[in-house]
Image (cartoon, rainbow, N blue to C red; front, side, top):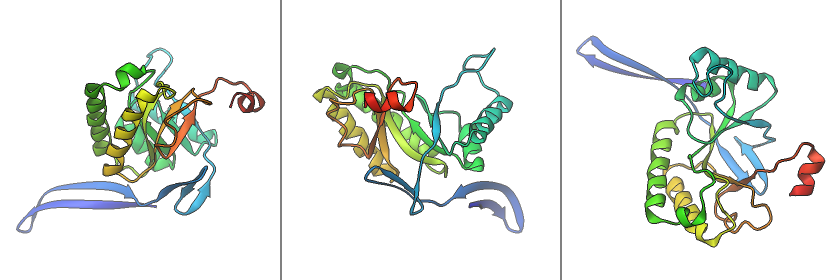
Length: 212
């Protein structure tokens, strides 16, 4: 359910300004390999969304954005992953209104371990994570925070990055933390976050099961 928070600035009996902020109250948990919303197990059905539009590439207007999210909802999806960076706040507003869960993530993509382990890179990523959470944590749709995609999670040097980012995010918000990887069998970082997404190029469920 959505509620509306009203904040008014008054001087005597005169109202100077008013802000109305919609918000929702909910709880997300990962228990084993299962996702729970408000204490009820939920089977996540969704897509990985990219900003790509015919005729405008990654440039998006409000009408196109709404149509995009409506089409995702009409597919029967209940969630989407916004890859590979925090998307426009308007998209989160639409997901709040339409009841779509969102997994939002940092723009850490295909980063090699020797760079991922550098202190400057880690500190910049932590600053980005703080800004992402400070901007978007009030959205009811946010179900998890991603720290990266397809970085070399099989290299032990990546562990410091994963641990420090997970610790930073958990100090700011209680929602699950994740990353996605193609390192299915040799991932050395998978015990650190709440869950790990698997990127596998497969055309059928049977092919997917063989590859994992």
